[in-house]
Length: 307
Image 1 (tube, rainbow, N blue to C red):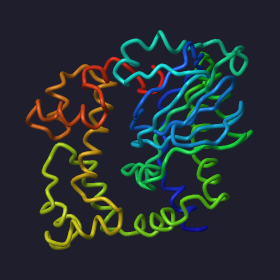
Image 2 (image 1 turned 90 degrees about the vertical axis):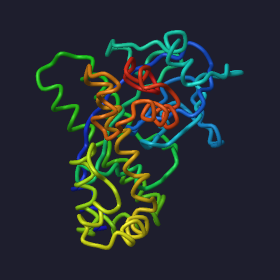
Image 3 (image 1 turned 30 degrees about the vertical axis):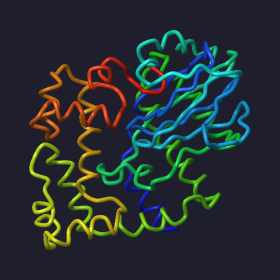
Image 4 (image 1 turned 180 degrees about the horizontal axis):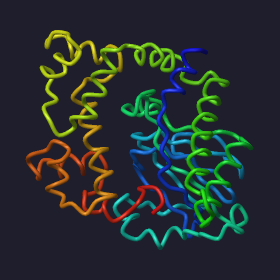
């Protein structure tokens, strides 16, 4: 348990967004994907995770780790199949975003949602690194209350709202980790992570990638950082993390690109360059391949799930 406590202590948690959504139509959205972790609580109606036959009732929660694809069905009855791109183009036809704190949890066909980052040593997405699928959490009163409180704070102009939201988002992360541990979910992945997050050479690589996202991140350079041979560094990284370093680097670059698209007015060419892509056309192809939408459309929304 001490190893898990150390991991939790190392987590940098960052609130991304909170939404209270009324479902207007029954839809199936294929391959939902976001870089942030998403925790959704169902207030009324139906939300289904394709491939999971669990019966979902009001009060149940759905956790989607960042970087994981999921096909979701919102509403009851025969769904209309739509692509991600169509959803984002016509999202007002499908979802109504509400901001009245008095209505939270009291509207038919509605759910609440909080999205957040949780990074080990401010570098590695913790839940993504576990390589776990989306999963349901049955009627977890504390998590439901935390989402309610974050929504209420986010809709208010009270002094200190940002601090309250940060603290409660950290509580959400701890409660999700505790749920995983109590139910012995993904035990092997957790044990592996508790081992490799203690390896100082790997931590040096993570930190170097984060600080040099636009620079030389070849295996030769990573080998110099970790003080291992160039021939061995790829095998070493994959042995500890389960993925090869260049795949990890591309994910980190794309995640950084999403942040810039959401928070800056830089051109797509400049953003591609800032995250290490000299060829804008190649950057755009890889972005569309990873997220299913063009970089320009990512800029015009806050969340692939619910904007």
